[in-house]
Length: 194
Image 1 (tube, rainbow, N blue to C red):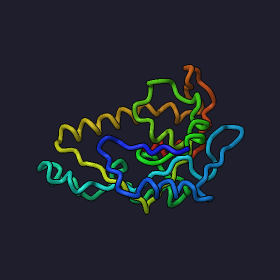
Image 2: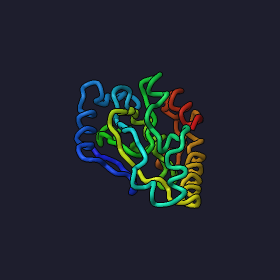
Image 3: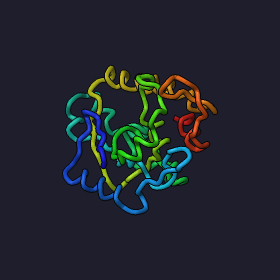
Image 4: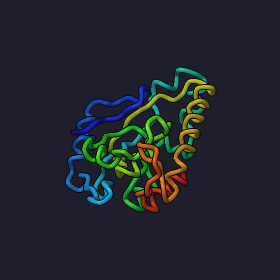
């Protein structure tokens, strides 16, 4: 019924999986789909936990020690609060979390061309409605060198550019045809803002 999605450098602390499942099972969080569009319109198809930097990644290199605890806004590695969640009750998915398989499949079926979107997490979260579970935390390793950090950020930026068609009134589907974009203004703004 649920899938927990993690990156290879993400650590899942003990009992975190049970906390994520319990949060998804709460009646207010259960996804409700719009019959016309298939999109999740209430509750959440995806829950994104808080993500922190693991203590073990700091000593690995001078770069990780120097920048692993830096302050600032980095939505990919510092999800503690989400402005969209706080203001609109809908967060931004960054690839680590739990999703309801049925709601996810229904919301995303036939929506995207195969192998065309490198950074698909945010747009998937817009279709399946993502929420931030800030009381549940995962940990991930900080890159050990500037080169690996720059390569990671370059992949994210390239992937973000591939989401531009979903800002338009029409977007490509799985068959390569352009059909009416079902995303609302808030979701399109999140894509633009990213």
